[in-house]
View 1 (tube, one colour):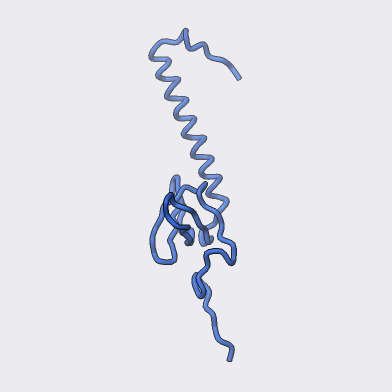
View 2 (view 1 turned 90 degrees about the vertical axis):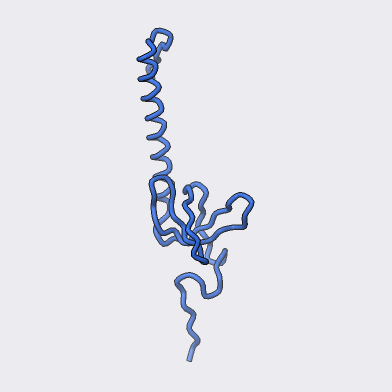
Length: 107
């Protein structure tokens, strides 16, 4: 890695360097969020814990720029950063007869 002696840079050069650093950090953050999003698929049952609220369970319905959209069983829409999500285990957070499962009585 090359070192930059910032003491020898002009104000304009420092501003340009700062802009390049900020843009690079944004890019790295975007790539990290994108990689975290790819751990989930549209239709996955996920859950997350908002601060001071009970566990929220729903279905991932959309990828956004920095977040994903989760629609809860009661119809609420949440945009959530993917690092706060986890997949729902088969028995965790499921309502009887909830989701896309229809229980039929045997004849």
